[in-house]
Image (tube, rainbow, N blue to C red):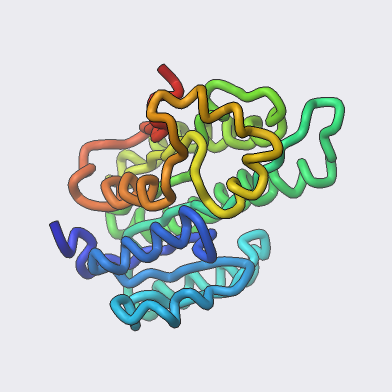
Length: 245
C-alpha cells in the first residue's frame, strides 16, 4: 500500500539515526511532509533523492522549550494543521543500581519524559482544534517488565507508558489517538556498540533469535500514524520478537 499518509503533516523527533531516521524516511515515502527533529545533524536526508522535499530537517534540542514552541508555531502557520507526532528521541543507559549516575539520570528524565510530555502538550493544542491527530510515543519493553542493569532507563520508559495512557484518556474526546510502541532489543548502531560488551547473551532470550531492525519498529509507527489504526488509543504495543512470552 502506498500514500498511507498523503497530505499529512508529521513531526518526528530523534530523526538523526536509528528508529527515528527509519520512521521519518518511511513517513515521507508514504506521502507525509515530515519535520525531522534532532539535536545532531540530519545529513542523511540530502542523500535520499526519493524523498527530497518531503523531509524538512530541524536541528533542535527538544529540551529547549522556547525554540521548540517557535518551531511548532511555524509549522502550524505554514500548513494549517499537524496530523502526526512521533516522539522517538531518547537517551538510554546501561548501569547497575549502585552505579547509577544521577546527573545522567536527571538528563534522561528531561529528554525521555519531560520533553515528550511538553511536545504532546504543544501539538495536542493544535490537534484539539482539528478534532483529529495521532501521537506515537516510544516506550520500551524494559518499561513494561523491567531489566537488570537498566533501572534508571526503565523508570523513564515506565513514565512514558503512564503518560501515554493518561494522555489517551484526556484527548479521546477530541478524536486524538495516543499510543506507544514498546520495542525489545533493536539493532541500531548505538545498541550494537554496547551489545558485545553487555548484552551478547541476551540474544538467547529472544525466541526469534535476532535483534529487531529499526525499519520493523518504523512499520508499527506507520500503522499507528495512519487511518488504519483509527479506533486505537491508549495502547502499548510490543515489538520484541517474542521476548515477553
